[in-house]
Amino acid sequence: MEKIIDGKKISEEIKKKLKSRVLALAKKGIKPGLAVILIGNDNASQIYVKNKERVAKELGINSQIIKMPSETSQKKLEKLIFQYNADKKIHGILVQLPLPKQIDTKKIFNLIDSKKDVDCFNPENIGRMMVNDTRFSPCTPIGVIELLKKSDISIEGKHIVIIGRSNIVGKPLAIMLINLGATVTICNSKTKNLQKFSSQADILISATGHAKLICADMIKQNAVIVDIGVSRNAKGDLVGDVDYANVYNKASHITPVPGGVGPMTIAMLMKNVILATENQI
Image (cartoon, rainbow, N blue to C red; front, top):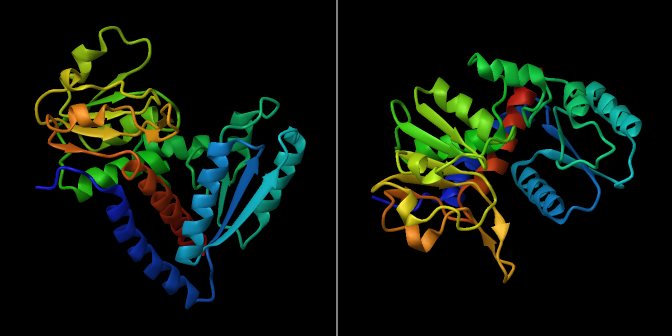
């Protein structure tokens, strides 16, 4: 049994299937289009957008990257979103987070056409997810679920503990896992005695960005460990929330950082773009 959950390998398998769907659309004269709006000079965002552009090109998706200065106004961004909402060659719209403080993030996500909301931040799509009637699934949460499924790790009936309550990962992932029959506990920075909860988990998912938060004495024997957190150590290397070397022998399965959840997030974004294209035609 393979202990390391290889997100890079699994994402490559998914991308092969996506490529065949893009080819099927091409036979009808249709090319999926994705508009990515990047405001400011955040280094992590720039790297992430560059990776999205690379994978889109690899799959045959028309990816338009719109870079705007950090002082961009709310009105200018809204005008651009309306433009892409009306553009029939653009099937997916993504506004890269974080946004500068002068931008009303909630309003921006309200304005993106829910049929083109490939990041699944529009309230309509969030509401659909709540009642298990999804149009799109948020990219990182569905990436985690796909990793578990492709690794033959059952979700139904399992006690899953999520550390992190963000609107991007923790909250939507909890809802999606509940919809799949899991018992879910959500912890956060205010949780007292975190170890009490983490040590009960059949599947422990951490998404905090605090390096080495999870060590061996915080998990039970043969737990499945999914590490979504990303930060940099003193050397500048990417590391996760999990003290990997310390936890490895005690876990039944574990995701590495990098090479675990990260590649899946981008693969799931591309899947949403293709799905949006298929739905719109």
